[in-house]
Image (cartoon, rainbow, N blue to C red; front, side, top):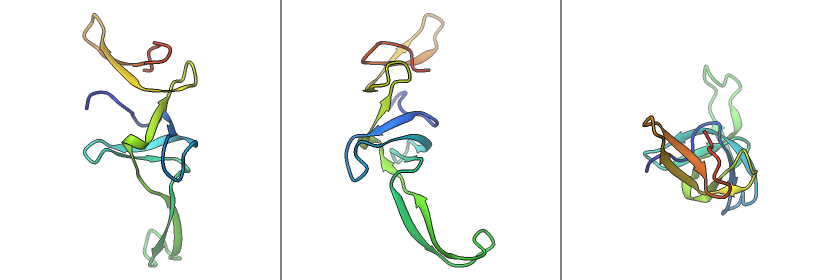
Amino acid sequence: MGLGIKKNDTVLVVSGDEKGKKGRVLSFEPEKNRLVVEGLNIIKKHMKPSKKYSQGGIIEKEAPLDRSNVMLVCPKCGKPTRIGNSILENGKKIRSCKQCGEVVD
C-alpha cells in the first residue's frame, strides 16, 4: 500500500455516520486497513467486572473505521487531500499533499 495515513495524523471522515467530522488517528492496522479516530465512531460495550474494569457496566469506546472512509487533512493548507509518495535524492520516502504539493512529514 505504500505510505498512507499514520498515527497522530488529522483525518476527515468522508462517508458513513460520522461524515464531515475531523479527528486524530489513535491507531492504524495496515493488515486490516482500519484505523481508530479519537472521539469518532463511539460504541457501547457491555463489560463484566474484571481487574481492568472493577465496576463493570457499559463502556463507551472508539470503534475502528475503514481506511477508505477517511482522507488526510493537510497540515499546511488545511484541506482534505490525497497523499502522494515520492523519494528524495538521499533515498528517503516522503508523503506530499496533492492539493498544495507541500511535504506532509
